[in-house]
Image 1 (cartoon, rainbow, N blue to C red):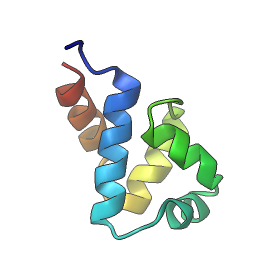
Image 2: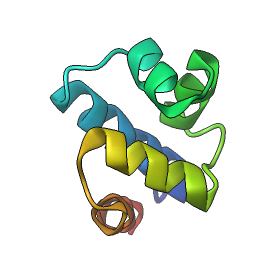
Image 3: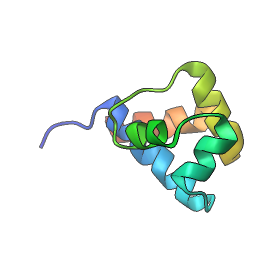
Length: 77
């Protein structure tokens, strides 16, 4: 089995944190000023967030951006 890509790993982290926060994709998107389909693309590993988007999402999900990056790196190894 191949390694998980960074995009897919980030998607897993985002989905877990969103679910833990009790937010739908639409609620997260509205709070971040993004489109719901973009959240879906991120969670499926089809897009990568910009740094500013990462910080916005982390703020809404009440985690440090570094935590999201570290969790992503741990999955992608």
